[in-house]
Image (cartoon, rainbow, N blue to C red; front, side, top):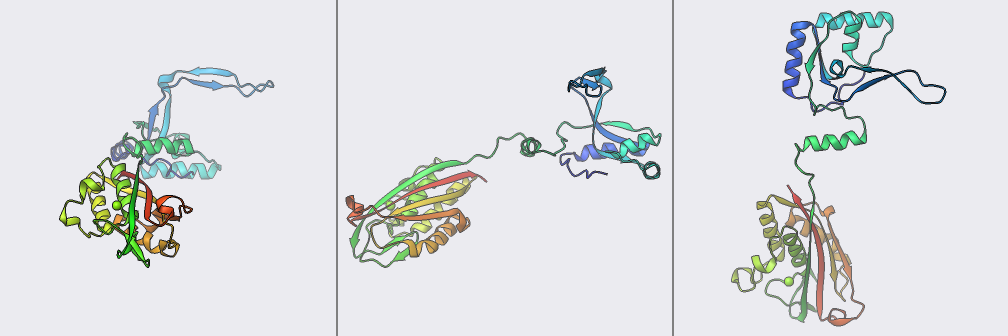
Length: 293
Ligand code: MG
């Protein structure tokens, strides 16, 4: 007998109706009336074509689903007879019919599909979403640049990197966090970092940019959104950021509230070109994917 686990969408109501009809009649099968015209065919001809033998009256055709319900004595006798005769069937109802029992039809459900192919799975996902559109992501980009000056710490991705120069800024000047924050706010169409945490507000003077990032993610959550992943490129001539990348990813991921595997941070130099290349500034580019929770 085949597993009946392929139909995941049978409703509680359908199961109840099948049980009550089976209790009354002895055997019941959920089935849907055919909408398509059914053609019975003759065996394939030597030409290779199958030909129509007969067109079946559509109103007599029902396509069996599960659940199927039986009184125990009915099912037992059907199984005993099948075992005695060495017969297998694709469903228990067929065995009950074979044993001479009347099998009543219970109105099936269109959503009670059998999931056996990859194409069925696509339909199943649509049913599981209850008709809501597929969850799609929204992308946002962020960019930031800060001048590098003596006497300031160099904080990137929440990590303080040993350096003779650091980022000039109202906050801690963390370009990676600022670019990520803008990317996330941008993906959610929630403005930018300057809108929510303006330079002019004393509250944000010297603020931890990891904290600002976490606050931006809280705004996102209020909109029913969450961050899927972020990818950041930091452009800095020196020092190398590579030894600090793992720690940056962990800190940024914690601020966002996602796993570090969903935060990518990469370092680049500017090949000596322009202000960044001369070591006068640090820049960062970020992209974030945001989706509904
Ligand atoms: Mg900034």
